[in-house]
Image (cartoon, rainbow, N blue to C red; front, side):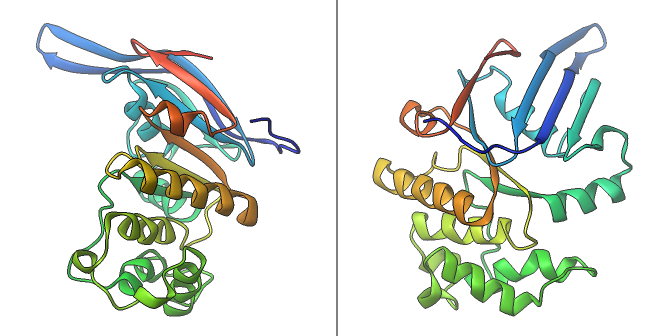
Length: 231
């Protein structure tokens, strides 16, 4: 699927290495000098076998993990050098996250779950409830505002999670197996939604997936093998 009219580079990973210590005498290198770029407006899938390093790579892109060496630039800002408070601000305002298991607060309604990111940002540009209602309408859940997660289907819960990820109008949406906990039909519906939101909101989307049918619908696939990126 070709992409036209792509903008500037929004994600740039330079020589990313990630090593973890297993014991006093043994280290494990998960990522090996990985280089990766995503253009503004692009929808990219990172694919690879279990243990290839793709989820670690996504976590580093999103500032949830830190590389052992190398740099990550998001919209030109080197997040590798930021202190935790500054990094948290970037995560909340510039990056939206969608996970396989939804991660909704079970005691809160759909509306309250989507309000959370705006409520936590004292300098947010939106009014929490107004923004949450707008986004839940955008993902097709205007009639489910007061339902708690246990009262929603898996596909509906993921739609709430996507709305929450968009609460502070991020430029970049990251998904870690966003369809992995859904059946094939619901998974395709979530990809339809992400594609639609990408076009309507000017989003850049980067997802990790093991599903070749999901990956094939993205503009570009990047393969990971043994901690290395193979374009």
